[in-house]
Every structure is written in C-alpha cells, then in structure tokens.
Image (cartoon, rainbow, N blue to C red):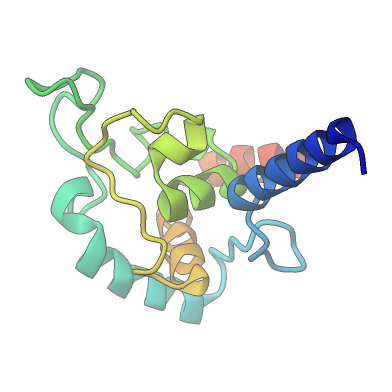
Length: 154
C-alpha cells in the first residue's frame, strides 16, 4: 500500500469519526427524537431538567440575567429555554449535539470555554431527548409550529 493511500484512508476515517460525533445516531423514526406531545417523555424530561439543568437555566426555563453578554470570565451566561430565548431557533439535532457533546465540540473549537457541560456519560440519549422534548412542550403554539417547520425543512 502506498503512503498516499494510507494517508487518504486515515483522512477519511478521521472525517467519519468527526461526523459520527457531531451527527447523533440516537434519533427516532421521526428524525429528531423530539416528542413534545408524548406525556411520558415530557414527564421524564421535566424531572431530568429539574435535576440537571434548572440550576443554571432556571426552574421556569428563564435563563440567567444578561444571557446575551459575556460575564467577567468571558463566558456566556445560560440562555433561557422559554419563548424569550433562542433555543427554538436550533433544530433538535443541533440541540442534542450541544447538550451531549458540549459547545466546543459542536463548533469544532476545543479551546472554547463554556459553563455548559457536556452530558455524554451523565445522561442517556433518551434523557437528553426527553429534556429537549420537555423544553419544546412549554413553548407557545406559534413557536412550536415554527420549530416544526424548521425541523421539516432541514
């Protein structure tokens, strides 16, 4: 085998590994795993959110004050997940990847500093989808509809 073939195979393998990390395999038949209309999923999500997310993102999904401005350490405060925030601007796959792997992995910058932990190894994929489903279940109908359209058109 020539050196160029080995290098090409290594490059392809590396790209596939990156794609595997950033494109979650844990999706439902619906595509994203979001099930805001499934009360059992939403109930689990509410419980996990209260235990793992509410300390920073707020019990009422309100986020931290001045969430659009970096804090004294240069980090972004926790954004709200209610209708006032930007969570609904992200498709389910992106939100899943951010939650599971962290911001640095999502943006491809391992030096990026964030207070948002990666939940890989802490929460199961089902628990992450449940939290995201719970969050979506709290949005007003018009925002849920806009998010549904975004999901369909991605």
